[in-house]
Each structure stands twice: as structure tokens, then as C-alpha cells.
Length: 305
Image (cartoon, rainbow, N blue to C red; front, side, top):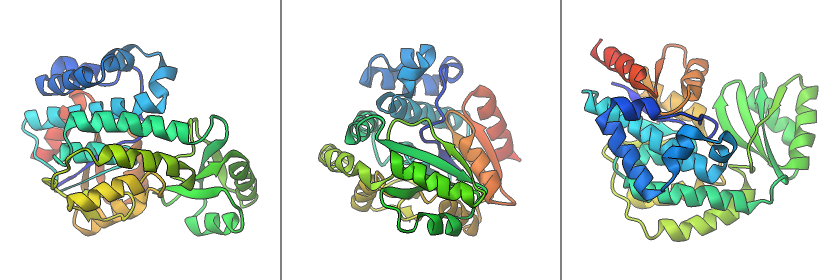
């Protein structure tokens, strides 16, 4: 029994997915389909430049393609489907592709638009996000009380919470939090994700998502909004939109998985961010990153154990 996890923005790097493409016919098929849907994506993923790959309208489909390619490579080598799945922010879309809720091509086109609409919702330089470390959520909420234009965006681990909103409000919040001895790290992002400032993006994406068929997932996929597994396609459609302006309740998702008996976690895709969040949130869990052929091999060994 294991849970599949799929990363969100910030996990990208130039070269991601190339070793999988060369080693796994299943991964190659996924990435060739991605290239046919969004021509130029593979060249950008493998050659950069990094600043172009990091643009949210490129980063989102790139991460989705590599996450799904890693998952298919694992299955093709004899890996089993997960009992449960979740994705962090953009990763929730990847989880739904893995579960069969969405077709790969539909999801790639939609997340490219998702990225574009998010970027266009707030003019560059007007929004900001910051990670707050070493301070519990209650203390952060106290510090934000009465401050307009800043919201809790990601509940990543017991000691890592991300805030998002208008740049000046986030800077003011950062000063208040430093007074409480928090460590504050401003994130290199191009927009204030998971805040009410993203409402225009949600409205625009609703029209595109309405044109696409969603099916019942083969295994339950957690919603970032409710922190519960969701299986009804019409509810999933609503929550994928609501997720754009709502906080990512990652700590609650991991703890709910643990309550259901999950101790093994496989993070499919680029980077090791979610593996780290599992280690910082759950005491007895074991997490592995599956983003290259070596990761696939190790994951299969764990499953056979």
C-alpha cells in the first residue's frame, strides 16, 4: 500500500525527464504526446533557458508531463497503482491524469491556460509570496490579524507555511513575523498564487474546463481545498477551480493518509520537495522520489519488500 504524490511549482529544473525519456518507452510515449500537444515543450525542458522554463505557463505543463511520465514508467516496470493520490497545487492536476479523471492532452492544454491566466491576474511586481519557517500556524494567523491583502496560501508542514497577497501587505506581514522570531523567505514566483487575487484566473479557467470531460478517478485523489479524497467528477471540476484561490492544505492531506494506514509515499516527477515535506510532517513514513530511472528502480524494490 502506498500513496502517489505529484509536485507543484518550484520543482522544475532544466534537463528534467530526459533520462526517463531515454530509458523508458512508457515515459517516452507520454513525453512525445506532450510535445505533440504543446510543440517546443521538450526542447524547453531539456535545454532551457531556465527563466523561460520557470514562467508559470511553461512550468505547469512541463511538471505535469514529467510527473505523469515518471508514473507511467513505474507502472510499465511492474509497479502497482496507488491506494490514494494527491498533488501539491498544480500536482493535483497530474494526480487526476494518473487516475484517469483527465486525458493527458486536455490537462496539458488546461494547465498552460491556468498558468497564463494566473500570470495575467496580477500585474508583475504587485504580488508576492513568502515562506514562514519555525513558527506554528496559530502564531502566523495572530500576526496577520487585521492586515488586509495577505492570506495563508500553503500549509506545507508543521513548521512551514506560505503566505501570499499584495507585495506591500506580504512585506508588512514579514516584518511582524520576524518580530515573533520566524524565519521568512520570499519565494521567486511571478504571481501571488493561492490568494483571492487569483479570482480572475479562476473565472477564465472555468470556461475552458467546462469544455472538457472528467471521469471518475480509478483511485481516490485528494483535493487541496477540502483535504479529503474526492471521486465525483462534477465535484472535482468545482474544486480544481476553487483550488486557484484557496490554500493548499498539505499537512492535513498527509495526516489523513496516515490515518488511513499509508506509510509509504512515492513522489513522481521532478525534485524532492514533497519527500521532504513527508519527512517533516509524519514520524513513521517512508518517502521516495521517482523522477529518473534510478528512482523507478528504488521504488520497485520498496514495493517488492
